[in-house]
Length: 146
Image (cartoon, rainbow, N blue to C red; front, side, top):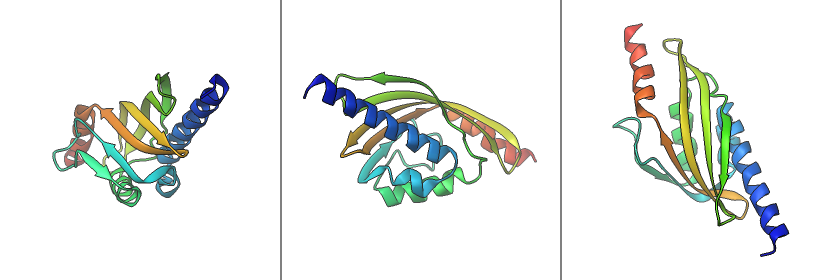
């Protein structure tokens, strides 16, 4: 692959990842998931809740999961803080953070994430996300205090 073609691919993949987080952060779950491959694999090495699966496969399954899990929050308004290109132009690592509010208690919710993304045919086919589970536990506990 030429350097120009590689740069074009990297830029296109970065744009897909950016748009995915923009749509997801504004709770456009269907729009966000349209940027995932039909057989996407998403996983969390450290699931933030014991009831959460450590991996989900499939666009429809991810849309259902995200719709259920994120609907109790005001839009996340993700901010991408850094993107790291890897040797393979179909992969990248991104750091991002959320700024939201947990609706049941009104508590602020801010977390930091590290995502590893892989792309195929212009869609995300793999997404591994590292998230601070303590922050989620703390904000979910605020519903019990109200």
